[in-house]
Length: 231
Length: 224
Image (cartoon, rainbow over all chains, first blue to last red; front, side):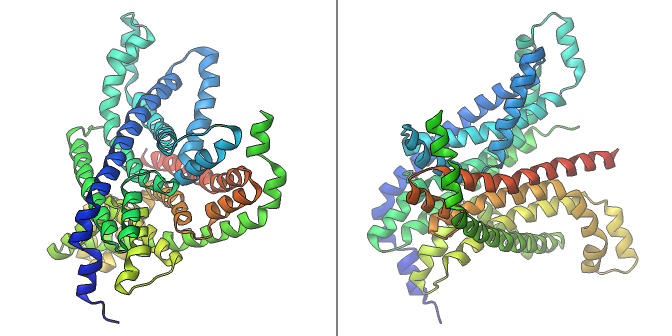
């Protein structure tokens, strides 16, 4: 069956439909970007905090907290995002907690990113040679001072490539939240496609996603090359 | 606390919905099995093509990888399932899901295999060529067996990501594990089936995560 090129033009690249749907697509893209930024910031912050706790060596506290953090990390790294989203969005209301789609998305994805970030930061911190730690202690720096001025700046350099890759992967996964009605680019595109009975907005949205993540991917490659550590 | 247990860990509800969940698990396993094989196979083919260093194919592979890595698989799924029928190509939700996940996965696997192939000592390839082996024979008999062992950790990690990504099937009403769990949740007005689905996913994925650590340890030992 021949697929008419005019059919492709009319249904995939219909300029009129796309121009009418553009405001909705744009607002969806803004939601995607905002949620992505929030998730990144929160994920990094919590991840770094958890990694620091796990790398400290305060006798009993670290042991117990370390186990708890390990369970948290293993659980979140192995759970499908959509299952967690559905669980939080549709399940929590049963115990009285009603979260909006945006809050649900941000909470779930930043928790997942924090789990990955904790592992990455921990590996980076542990890769900093022991001499640095010993020298800091010998100079009288407290644990927090040592972390803040000596270890973490070096560890962040090591961590950035892997972290950037993981962050981009999670930002891509945020489009899954359209399944729980997050008004992001994909959901707006589907709605517009339904309203106009024409899938051009969907194609346009796919193109927008590809452009955005292609640029992000280039940025990550640049960061990888710039901060490449020579072991 | 009681409320949490009766709403999220309700054994009666989980037992009542176990049939549904197992049916869903079967569908998910089928999607994952197909998608994994297709993605790994195609990714391997792409990386071998890439290794041949022919300008035209390099550009094509580059385009493929960047387009399908940048496009989230759920977006591709929506395009395949909702947009294609308008130009006469109607495919089932199952096929659309497998296609979306495997094209996305193949792009990642190609990069992983490429890294593995490039990690093999160039002397190996030189010796194979000197012995008269063709490019394909070199790949098949010398390079790939070594490369595959090297890339086992990232290969397993990426496979885990693919399995996690298979949950998007629920977004197009394929009766997979998550969709069945959501239906059971609607029937019994209780979130326990979803927790049950999550546990089933963890039972598959956590052993894989342990496998990754095991491979990484073995790699480190072999390097020393």
